Image (cartoon, rainbow, N blue to C red):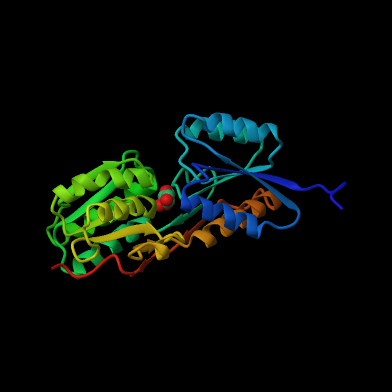
Length: 275
Ligand code: RIB
């Protein structure tokens, strides 16, 4: 009986439903939502974020979860606080004094990617990044560069591209020209494009070049070759974020909280020893 029951409405904003990482986040929240909670999901770019927030507030959301970077934090904070709408930020690092957060150890993740490639003897290592680096990805990059520098290394090439499969594909030309023996690609989605582009050029992974991604979304183990990556606990991130925002609605005065998850290296076929 759907009539007459008050359900809590919680809005979730992510950059896009097509990105495998955020598709998993959405799925985990949907699967773990208690029966007295309704979720409404919106995808938004930086430019459409304000409209997305307005539209969710108009629909009567009691709380919001941001699975994306918030460009105008102060404004968003004032707007939501005025309406007494608590919010949580996951994946990104926003303002620790304004809301609850779910984060992972991005610096360590980047560092693990570098250590893994270096342990296989690679020294000519390329880094493939999205054009617009969000805070969390900056930390990922910092961890990677920091660990390379412990062996007096810098990336053989730094290639920027769009945060998409197409972006990865488009970076392949420069990657081949750089004569790198390995590459760290800042997320799996771009790495999928890189693998496709290398296959078009008949370049063998890992024999000719090793590839490591980031996220461990479920595509990683279905690629040919299967993708070595840094795993974020995507499912737990989504579930925990939802639990925390519900707790916030139940107990508005609890101190703000940040839940922190570790990441781990998942070694598959796409990385191997330098030749
Ligand atoms: O795949 C999407 C990427 O953007 C992930 O690595 C995640 O951490 C996000 O910020």
